[in-house]
Amino acid sequence: MDYGHHYAHFNASEYDYDYNYTSWNGSNGSIPADFDSSSDWCEADERQERIIRMFQTAVFCVIFPLGVAGNCLVIATFALYRRLRLRSTTDVFLFHLALADLLLLLTLPLQAVDTHLGWVFPAALCKALRACYAVNTYSGLLLLACVSVDRYMVVARAQDMLRLRGRILTGGKVAAVAVWLAAALLSLPEILYSGVSGSGSDAYCGMQAGWRVKMAAYGAVIAVFCLSLAVMVGCYGAIARVLCAGHARRRGKQWHRQRTLKLMVALVLLFLLFQLPYTAVLSRKMAGQFCGLLPEYVTCTLAFTRCCLNPVLYALVGVRFRRDVLRLLHDSGCARGLRLAAPSLGSTSTSPTSLPPTSPTFYFPPSLFFSSLSSFHFSFW
Image (cartoon, rainbow, N blue to C red; front, side, top):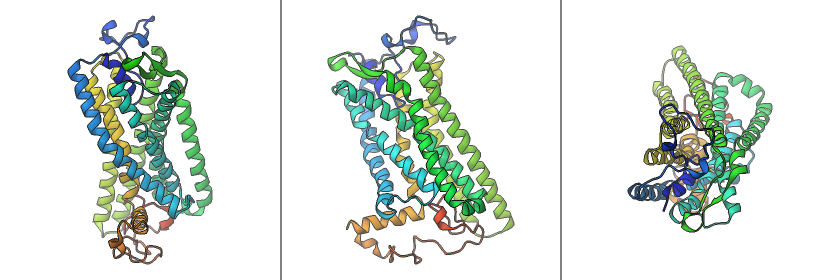
């Protein structure tokens, strides 16, 4: 069996890496004008094939249930306790981020079957699978950038956020729609060129396009990653300066500021950990300098793992979301013992998971944030 068939369609960006790099001089990155990527493959030997399958199965068994559960919790809290009335731009972006990650994770079972058995489903489902993956990958990355901008605005432009709350909320909803439209446009190569090739156990679902189309798709993935990273670093860096300036003006409760700064650093580092390796591999492939399936596969799997951690990093660490989750568990009868931890789940009274009414440093209304510090009504903890 040519494992290149089965590996190519599983790739985390869902763009085929079906190049036989021995077919041209990879040292200078040149690609022959008549090169047809649909017929050349980066192949794996039997040992690599076995390792890849075992690794995929183990990782999918972990990230699929955890990721689906985490993102469903986020969506359920909106649906049950906020009736989808998103009250801030943070609510808007986190809801759409959870939706994008959930839809992305739901593609994993089909990809696992495809890797082990070949493509045994209808051709229309192949196109739908790859389109779903591409759209939700792009939208997830862009929404992370939107969350960063929103957090910067909440901290650096607090008065404007309060005064123009209605307009800003509308703008957030428009931005979320724009993200999905941009993701759909970036996914056009997958939507237009995906299909099933081969037959039987060698059938695979992949992009049936020439190298120019695939180079454009690879470039889009790298560009969106770089854009998201630049926005995250810029916004979180600006937030850190605001927090440090506020701390210099008003001493006390230093651990709150330190915890917030550590969380921001963790968000950026984890984003780099799960996305940068794959982007680096992709860049080398574009230059015709890399054809290693195992490193590529590991980095692609790391990119999947981000969808499992996003609910924890961006939502469930928040006081309000944790309170909603406790309420959900209590109402469903799964955790009656949590009553003491939140004695008045339906009220606004202070509890171990609720916030003090005022803040000594920033006077931001709690309704503007999905989470906050006890000394900063601020969307990081």
